[in-house]
Image (cartoon, rainbow, N blue to C red; front, side, top):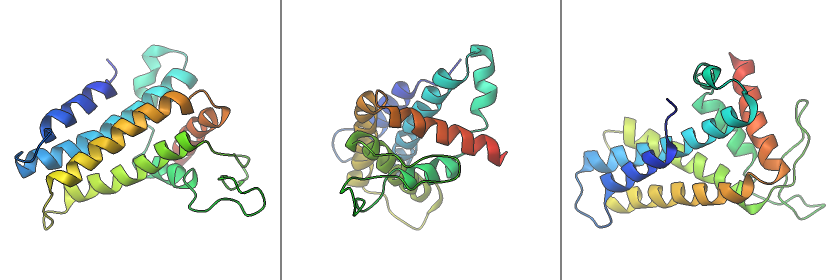
Length: 173
């Protein structure tokens, strides 16, 4: 059975709660779970769009890697617009053409990168103290990514974004 990203997001919200007062361990777990909600949302989209045999999807999904997906998200979240076109574009590579990005796709990519960093801190930096505001921000980023994806998935660039994550993860294996 596939992991349900919405259930992960709902769990993250319950762990963090609407107001301060949650245990720091719940805040850490909430941040991590918010990241995994977005991670699995993208994996489910990739599997649904590119792996036609449902029984094969869990095996193929294991090939998707956090670092590779993050690298693609960094590419899809350029800091400055292209000087010539004044639009946000991905750089062209040997494998993939340059893409003009929608704000929604940039939002998904940005959220993934920020959530990945927040999860790394929450899961591995025992020296830091996690505050409710940081956990609530992670929840908001994940919710925003879910909402933005509803629009981004309909743009051809959204499909190429998923293809690039899939292709680059598979090639690395």
